Length: 105
Image (tube, rainbow, N blue to C red; front, side, top):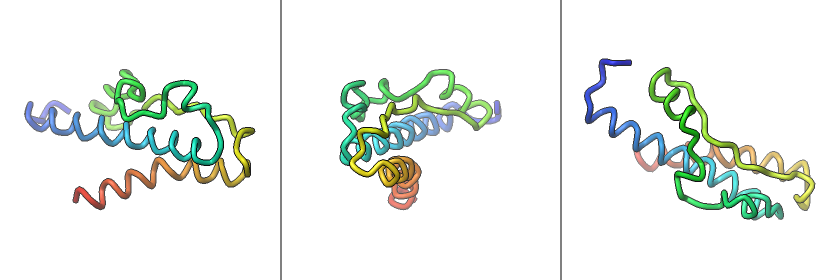
């Protein structure tokens, strides 16, 4: 935990913030494209990290390597196909992390 250099901590913090933001934005984008406007209503369809980062979750992620972001609100009753909408919206976040890792490494 405390064996990281300052430059490494800064680099890891930036990478974590970017990946959490893209992850949550992907959930919001998928839900919106599938017919749910709830993420737009709650201003979560954005790449602004301040809309997605939960401070306690970010600190926990950096210290104990387990954390979270603010979940994107979704109303499954707004999806055109409820079952498929829930599945695609759920998969969108982790899939964005895999794609991001593929292009960055």
